[in-house]
Length: 194
Image: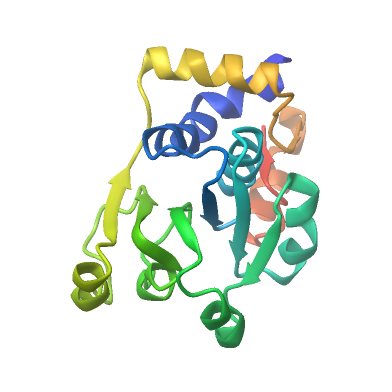
């Protein structure tokens, strides 16, 4: 693995790997990855390599076409209420990589009984708050996660190397930093700049 490919794994990679391992992504499990960006595209690849059936949930139209290339078995367009409703109760685990506060209730509805939604890196009260009825009656769980430790990071790097998982990156020379910054602000970056 090149240093350029490994560098984003040290943060983005371990951030999604840790909850996938903690909540037992693997064969026979149906895993959803919400938000197919810098973290989410790695989550799709990792969950697939762990042997899970992977559903990508995205709010970006172009990522609906891109998610299967990353290994998603299914894609749910988050803006399509009928598509979301058609998949209610279908997933064991959802890892939400959506980087801002968002309504978790439509995602909670996608969970099976005893399913878990893990929200990554949202450090403020969720708005609107989670609906406690489905949590209680269907024994669903809501959890948060941020990153893994050093030994788990080592494990993740070995897992990625063994399974040929690397982030989609664009390496840019320092002279192009202004162009890169404008691309980030304009949301034109496909997954990650390095």
